[in-house]
Image (cartoon, helix red, strand yellow):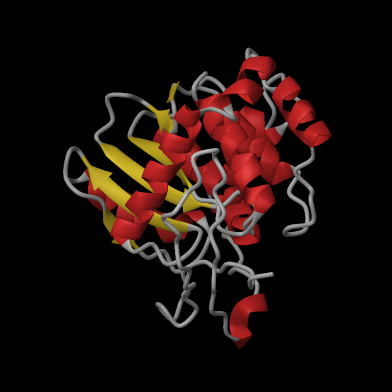
Length: 258
């Protein structure tokens, strides 16, 4: 079992994840990529505490709006187009490279994502683009294929959020058929049968392969990892020092200035 992935750190890259993103993918759709990650002794250090304002923002962002799940409430009413969440007219995109099994990706989703959505996505300022990788093991691949398939119905973000809410121990087999059925059933307006059929399709394999190739080109070292793209310009890497909203605001505000 590979080490737990790690986020960007306050000491720049001395907590960098190193993964070898495999580019060979079987036509049948198997996406098995070995990952060799480096981690240091500071791996278990807690993320810095958020300010009172950030906590209030995150609470607001995750309050339910007629649903039982914060994951569903966080993205409710926001336009989606495949992997992209947000106003289609927004010219700034935050690219999030994630593995749904990654516990640090879950930490980002819990700590920072709701506030970023509340402050930047809901007002129509930016889009967020989910760039899914599956390097940790079979559970990663199974969850990713279901999420990408849901994206064909513009429901990816609900499914990804629900997977994070139900995330189990790495490579423990937690992405069961029963869990998949439960998650798909919880997403309003989603055709679960179609999503499960599409998850096995060549179209899903093609999309996952394309993201993996993109990650290789960008030399994505691990997950979660973040880039910003402005208009048609190539994406550039950002290095938030912690997984809290205040660490992302400077880069997003700067991008919005053009």
